[in-house]
Length: 469
Image (cartoon, rainbow, N blue to C red; front, side, top):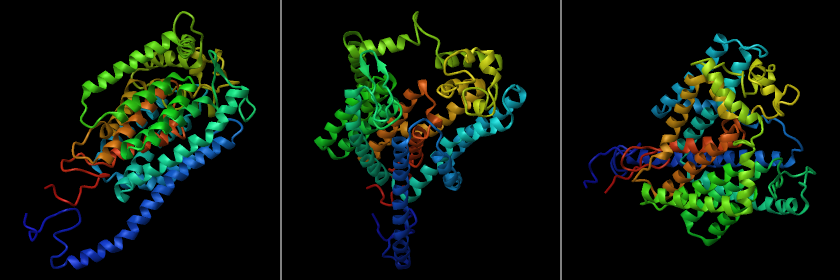
């Protein structure tokens, strides 16, 4: 290789020893403190968001909306616009704009009595845009500061600490049957569902699933037995909550994280088959399986009871068919606008108002069916746009770069595990507008979009300045 030959590696127009290299070296030295400060601020931001969220949950005595994610999106909005210069943002932006246009158009084409329009549709579009804003902003931060590894490593430590802090309170729940906040705990079969420091058992399952992923990824990076032991401990607490969505998402995510770098789809199929076999044994021969099947039987089968989630999912397909292809528009079904700006007529038309948790007097479960909301409000066209948005962002963590470093590959697998867990949770929740889950989803998608898919290796979306040998 001729070292005197001018080449283009990043911002350098040739070897630094050539004439003019002194000026370049000075510029790089001046830029280092700026980059270092940006990385530190980025790391601090991610940790602060997560810490504030969990402190708020620990101090809360009842459910209530939080402005944390809305304020964060307003702060990050300029960074999201900066990422629009990257061509990888074009398809996600177009699909999200198409989704918003469908929600607004549907609200005008099919006016819904009981809901104030267009304010309800505008609010719904704004809330549904939070995921896109966070994703683009996080991608810009990772790409600009090169701080992805530092961010994830610091979040690993914070999540593990939060998991360890919560353990004594879980044992208190199990021993007394009452949470530390004085609320009676739910039962699933013979199992008490602990809440720890939080208000709902699912929040415990989410934290420990994230903790299991963090410990597993640390083990992949460092091969320390302590991390493997922590992973096993946190998985036990996920199972203790007896929530099938989180259990399935956790085990599938761990299977992805622990796969060897050279394993193909065959090994993944074998792993899934083993998990299916273990699940079949647990469901048929253990008390845990009896509790899970009993809970599933409440929603499906001959003994199913009428619940808001099941009824809304069934109604959403009928609404999409009745208002094909636009749906009923934003803020009309399963969204904040359908409650905040009046009680939607759709709840009367499709019998939701008769169910506990779906009535005008107590509409506490109307926002728990995320996919039902997307299908009903967006119709066939709107939900297609939204799915295309998720796929156009998520393709970058599904794709495996053969030239990526082992650390980059470990983070890619972690992000894929996060996304699959959130998709599992979305069966009976609205994760893409939830304060915590939308943050984690944006973290995963943003990391993927900050990476380069070009040959030659990539790290946080910046092509290496060292040429391949």
